[in-house]
Every structure is written in C-alpha cells, then in structure tokens.
Image 1 (cartoon, helix red, strand yellow):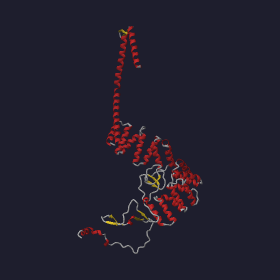
Image 2 (image 1 turned 90 degrees about the vertical axis):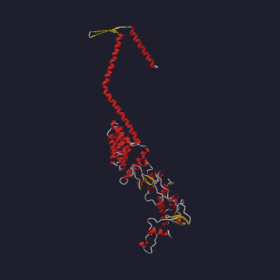
Image 3 (image 1 turned 135 degrees about the horizontal axis):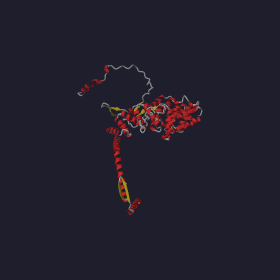
Image 4 (image 1 turned 90 degrees about the horizontal axis):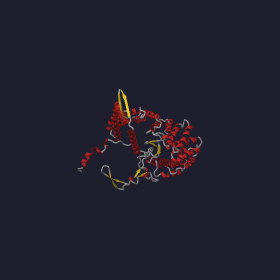
Length: 519
C-alpha cells in the first residue's frame, strides 16, 4: 500500500513539473561552428534526455564487447565445474553402492574436469581403494596431505594405508604429523597413545592422554590414566619403590577397582609398615572386584603372623563379599594352611557339586593333607581335569597368567579383564556339573540325561551285528592320573610278539564270505 502511494505521488509530482514547464515556455539558443539552433525549453530537455540514454546504451554495448572474452571463459569454467560436480556426485554414489567400475570412470572424469577439487581427490582415493589399487590411493592421499585444507584427511588416509601394509613406523610418523598439525584430532592422538603404550613409553603415553583430556569422557580418561600409572609403577617396582608407591596410590584414587594398582599399593604400604592404609585399599578393591592377588597381599600384610592369624584376616576380607567364589577360595586356602580342614571344606561346600578347576584342586589337596587319601585326591584331580575353567586375565581371545596394560594381539590399552575365558562367545555346559560322584565311590556315573540300557538289552554293533549290554556298562571307570604309574602288578612273563601266523583273518575275507554262502 505504501509503495502504491509513493508511486502515485511521484507520478503526480512529475505531471505537475511538466505542466509547470508547459505553462512557462522559453527559448534555448545554441551557436556552434557557425550554426545557430533555437528551440523551446521542453524540446531541449527532451533532446538532452534522449542523448543521455543513447550514451548509456552505447557505453553498455562497448563494455559488453570488451568483456565478452572473460564472460565466455567464465561461462565455460562454470559449465566445466558443474560437470565435474555431477561426476563427483555420481562417483560418490557409486562408491556407496559398491560399483567400482562407475566409481573409477567418474573419478577419471572428475580429475579431468575438476583437478583441484578436494572431493575429486577423495573420489580418486576411494575408487582406487575399492579396486584394490593401493598405489593410486596412496598417491591421492599424498596429494591431499600436501594441501592445507585437506592435510588431515590425507594424513589419515596415509595412516590407514600404512597400517594395511603393516608398516608401523610409517603409520606412527603420519599420526605424529597429524597431531602436530592439529593436537585435537582424536584418531591421531589415540594412535600416538596406543603406539607409545605398546612400546612401553608410559611417560609419552601419559602426555598423549593429557592432550586428549578435553575430548574424552571423564570416566574413560580417569580409567586410562590409572592404567598407564599402574604400568609405570610396575616398571619401577624394583628400581624405585617410592616412585612406584606414589604412582600406584594415584592410580587407586582414579580407579579403585584396578586390581594390579591396589595389589601393588597394598604390598608397598605393608612393606613400609602402613598396614591400616594398605588394608583399606585392598578392602575397597575387594568389594568392587574380588581377586586372588588381593587376597594374597591381604594375607601377608604383617610379616611374621601365624597361619591362624592370616586365616582370621582372610575371614574378615571374605565377609566383605560373602557370595563370591574368590572369597570361598581365599578362605579355604587360608584355612588349609592353618590346618583347619573343616572350615576349608565348609568354605568350598557350596561349589563342590559343580566345581571349577581351582575348587577341585583345593579339594584334592584337602583330602591328601587331612586324611592322606590318595584315591580321593586323584578323584578330585580327575574332576579338575574336566571341570569348568576359572577366571583369568583375558584379552582378544588370549589368556595371560598376569595382567598387562596393553593387549599383545590388538595393541588396545586396558584390554585385559578378569573373566572366564571364552565367556564372551558362550562356553559349553560344564561336564562335571552333570556327573554325581558318591562319597565312597571311585567311579564317575554317566550323566542322568543319558539312560543306560537295561540288562540283556540289544544294541546295534558297528558291523551290523548285535551284542548284549550289561548293567555294568553304565559305570565308566576313572582313568589313572598322569602321574600314576598304574597298578603294581608284575607280569609273569614278557609279552610274546605276534608271528606271521597270527595275521588278521581279514586277509582272505572275500573268499571266506563266498564259501559261507554255500554252507
């Protein structure tokens, strides 16, 4: 509405101006080169306006003619860029779809039309990777690494290619270069951290971790720092005990459930006479994660204590996690050392029906130590051979006797966990859990799920014959333990070797079968 009002106002003012000039006619006289021109003011004004318009039009035409080469060049460049953009788009879609042929053709077209486009370099690298041309992919990543805007992308591609060809020194150099370019780059900082940790450079790994502090979640940062401090403390455990204790104490503050840190701190504090502080650290870690290393350190907090005193101390520790199998094992071990066999049996009673290997081994030791019953001890050792495995330090399918800060398989930091091996993929049923051994028997009974045939029943033989099965087949005698020499029975005479006459009867088996048809 305002624009309409302004338009009509302008038209009205223009009409008033024209009417004002029409009411006041005047004359304009121009003398130039002997010519004299006389006209009215209105005609002179109109001629001047036409002249100005003509000058503007002619100037525009001249400017367009002079700038036409640049305009044509700009048009062609723009058209080339659009074609390159379409080629890049088509190629990236082909990469996502897994069409290597279209991706390569589009990459070649994009490289020809838009050679300096970062996306064209990216398409060239990815299409080369799809087709297996590692050299072309690496060349594209090197070209990207030489540019300022794509340097990090190129370094990452070179880092991945170096890892694929197992060139670890080159991969480390590319990661370090990326960290120098941008310290906040997550993958590069993590790669440098993993590399330094794998090499045992704990101080350098701590520096890399501190540089990543802003990009990591606080719990993850505290855990990884605790692991690195523990690794550093274990490296200094024999050479610098004070420094090791300081590092271990800091690690326990960051991660109270880190077993190696708590065990090392407790051991060093006990050696320094600070048993109360050591006990607090061990107890806090035990409540979060019971472990035999913690029980061992807790039992030896005070040197010179008797076995009964150690047993009483372990009892207090076990009461803090009464339902855990490690509490039962620690208490049974301490009671066995103190000669309190009844308490040792009582501690393992809940796990005797389906024992693990350590439970069965302890039960065998109790039988042999308390009663000297080698038969019962061998029986338990046989059960231990086929019992369920106990928890162990496991990482990437590897089982280690001791904790390590870095997995030797994958190089991951803090990869080892205390768990039953193969628990992640699901282990089979416990064989020993289905067997029932009575107190005074020396044979294992077939699992209840498998029913033994009745006396005199027939079962098929391997060669089409039938044989009788007695009820004694339901009992499988235990085999001798590996260290058992067997029964002390002397042979009456040396075994007689077989002669040629004792050859198997199957030599003429075809003829015998043919003759039997006519009997």
